[in-house]
Length: 415
Image 1 (cartoon, rainbow, N blue to C red):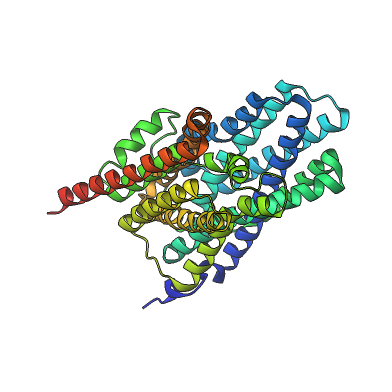
Image 2 (cartoon, one colour; image 1 turned 180 degrees about the horizontal axis):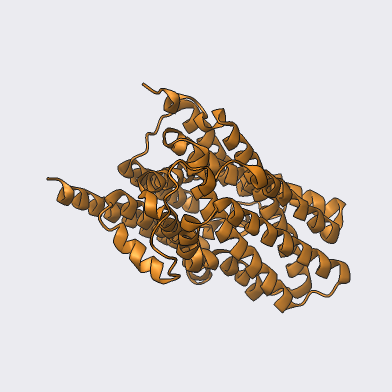
């Protein structure tokens, strides 16, 4: 009997995955460094809230529009080359920012083009990267690989702003972002000769269905309609993305001010980092202890508890309690989101894996483009504390309804 799923950090026992993890963290760090430097420079030059809002929309909207078509393309092509193309787009964006900073010629339409280019690179990278995991690790280690990938994302989110701020201060924005373009190179070079992709698979059969663009979205929805776990997890990811997403993180200066730490400093930085630190802690604990076996019911329960933690945070007037609740929220978010993605990747039919993963990304990432409305815009009317309470309450209700739907669907499929 294979005991490998019980090992701590099971995916790390595979050399190819270690290389994938290291280059993924480096690229995710570079992604966040670019955000730090480019957002700062846009603010300094234009002082435009609309442009800052466009930066969020342009980052997530490509996931909403193109995740399924990109997944369909990944089904029929080599995901390594798609990832390399994404890295080249990221590098082009960094080099473009660097050119405009050096020449002091940045205009608003330049910034919009570069932000859109960056968003398109993201959707190419994430969907193809998730599909490449099937070639790197055996199915038994796939949940570990998915969880570690999610942890790597938070490592990049934690380290990227710190490194980006240091580069901004020591090298300046132009030289800093030009140097940042080099951080994408290791992933490009590793994938050049990495023994993965269609050419190295034992089963060389390719999907017979052609890439149909946006028509693939509706067809993929019909294809998974009889798979209750995938349906429930895709809806769960979409609800979490739409109602909450990263909307409350963008409002952290307001929460910090109300907690008595509105000035830049260690206390404010700890609030910003607490959510990501909780996610990192979850990745380590879950990989070490195997406390939570993946199941749809557990994912929905954890999502419900995540909402309760965010409601408690939004109503807290104590800084230490708020910090602890953010840490707990990060722990719960990584736990349920990585579990949901693992269940989708384990259950996706082989012939349409890319499309199914793309549909999940469309829901779980693409709908984040609207989280600024549910928390931010509504917060400007009723206050950010009450808007987060409302968004988290709506998400909690959604988790309950999805669980009821899942139970009804599974009962209907039983003989």
